[in-house]
Image 1 (cartoon, rainbow, N blue to C red):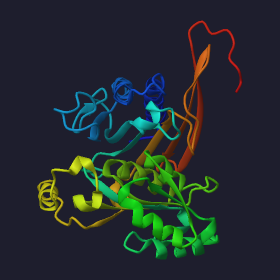
Image 2 (cartoon, helix red, strand yellow):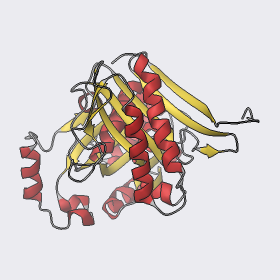
Image 3 (cartoon, one colour):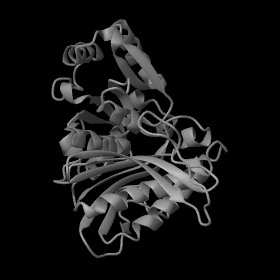
Length: 334
């Protein structure tokens, strides 16, 4: 990977965000996702690279585009692995709620953990708490550490947790410390990354979400020097999801073993989930969120708001782009 890819990667997420945003609020989550996938794939195909999707929309038989193992790009240039979520928060997009975005992580070949279609226990925290909080500790212990690291009282801390039945006890424990809980319905990537920036009002992400999104979050937080840990969840009794109604703990362990994961309880650090020498995160808002605005459609232009975080040059670029329409006659500055 090299710096010339950063602008192209930005355009990939911008085009995916615009495509999904065309359907915002229409209740068409699958269609919004499909539109983002097609736009992302089309733009990736123009990049001079030997790209490969390592985390995508599913296996080839389930996803005709951006499936795991799909090759993208022109076939010439550097080898790049991608973890993509073209429409992260499809329900949020469908219902015109905050926090939906087009997102990806990129790294040198072999630099992203091939996250299986599992769930993952996650812990995201600011740079000041890196290596001090630990996913193996209780929420109570981690909040005390976080309070000390940030110089904030527990009552000033905001802990984001996915609003799921499996988190009932976790939420109750967090509240006993005096910390505040911010439940979210979907889209934990943006809230995880928000932990890496001061001033977002979000101090920590705890709980269980999807493993592929955990890898994307890890890439961003590693590049920011922030804290991220993940631990795969394989017990249906812990995941508490209808999708695993017919799965068993033993069967899931066997699936992980087949994938080459023998230590099923391993705690992964950010630099293990995103281990490449060079790592880039890119996200573009579909709807308004913590980090950036959603797509805005105007008479003569379309506006996107995006974020690129890169270890290539140790930067976090917040980018507002005006996409000018043919025949435009009046483009406002803001």
